Image (cartoon, rainbow, N blue to C red; front, top):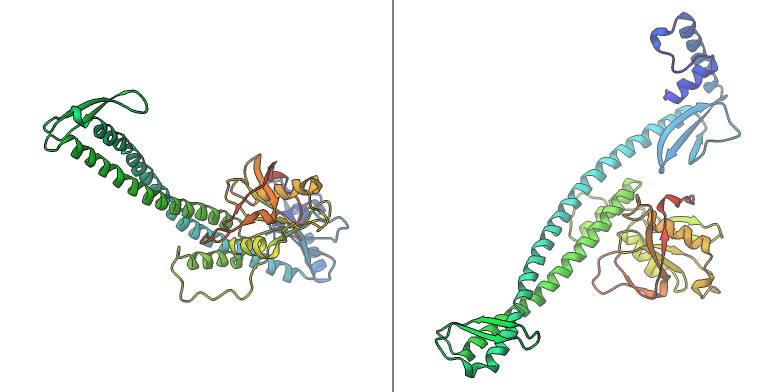
Length: 382
């Protein structure tokens, strides 16, 4: 039996639950044994109810007690029989253990990918710095071209004044070449660096997209509440070629649905569970006049507030609903543990997906920003 049930049995017979076993005598043991028998008989006769208590949508404890007109706070569910309730409790606990193990494994894989991407970013930044240093060769070529008449083949150095800064410049010359040939060599080095820089900027942009995407995946993995949700994320990673496709993986028959809430003003708030849902929710299901929210510059999920068509001004959006939706956007983001989180919001019409963007990735304009507190995301899910 759970500790809470044993404590209740002790209290029923007037024994302190914290009394050490070595201080108990025949009276205490006999009283507890008799009460346990009565409790079991009561369960069989339907005098007691079995209630499962949940934390963060996962089973936390089951309680067998007399029916109460005041159920405990938070999510809970009453079962018709103790056997069904207890079986459900342990099955859900096993499911939770399996989910946590799978989340740990896939998180380790994604973090390994991210570490490689961040190392690549570090080396790319170094290459970019070197390429930018070669910008000076353009100026050197221009100076040598303009003042070529002051030098001749065989010179090893040219002392000139920079056109732009007015600072003195010392330029090394290859004595095998004329001043003009030295200038051309510097122009060639500069042009090569420019080409390298353009190519490097494309590679850096792609690597940054990979980083942003994988960071968002980590958030979604952490928030997954079932194996079904986690399998959808893994399936997405396989389609995006981050993971090898598992030949024995069954295609998801039943897709998960977004989280749904109702604001204090009666407006529906919808929160995506994964990138597939984010794309469908934002780009296909939301109407142009609906409100769209996302944690600012932080990996997170898309949040939609369904607004009536008559509401066309941002000033008409109920303040309480906006605050509640922003708190949800902050809670379902990487900044879940933070105190204050900036959240951007705009009408759905201002959100679009660039060509070739990863799942869940969008851009937006004409937006406003509100400070939200993820700790205040207290709306109950429908």
